[in-house]
Amino acid sequence: MTNPLQDVLKSKVILIIGTNTTSNHPIIANYIYEAVQKHGARLIVIDPRKIQLVGISNKWLRHKLGTDVALINGLMHVIIRENLQAQTYIDERTTGFEDLRACVANIHLSTSPVLQGFLHKTLLKWLVFLQQRVRARFCMPWALLSISAALTM
Image 1 (cartoon, rainbow, N blue to C red):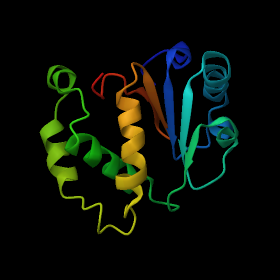
Image 2: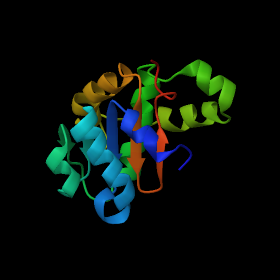
Image 3: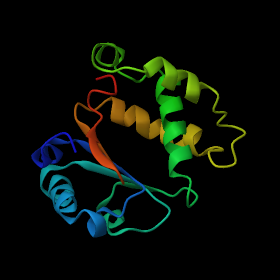
């Protein structure tokens, strides 16, 4: 994790994908509960399992078990296709973005059995919602990272 846990409390949107945060990261889960219940953060859970945080989430999206990586690749494809990324931030602070763009450009959302309809119809609406917020967080099995700079404000 690259940012302080207290930053979770400043989030307007928290997106959890493929992690049972309350079991595996209970301290982070406590911050998420506080952000949602006391500070009004919106919580989106993307997980096939009904994890404990689903109970306080604003939206629970269920995808097929074992398809987290395909879903995240599709998510990146949609972000880039819809030009929701903060290109200036990416240009100034990252490397390899053009390789990522080329990699996810070949994802066909309409023909992928994993992604068919899911990203296009449901997740795009939530990506636009995220894009309109000043501070948001992704919670994934391997990291809690800020997307406030990765999506255009």
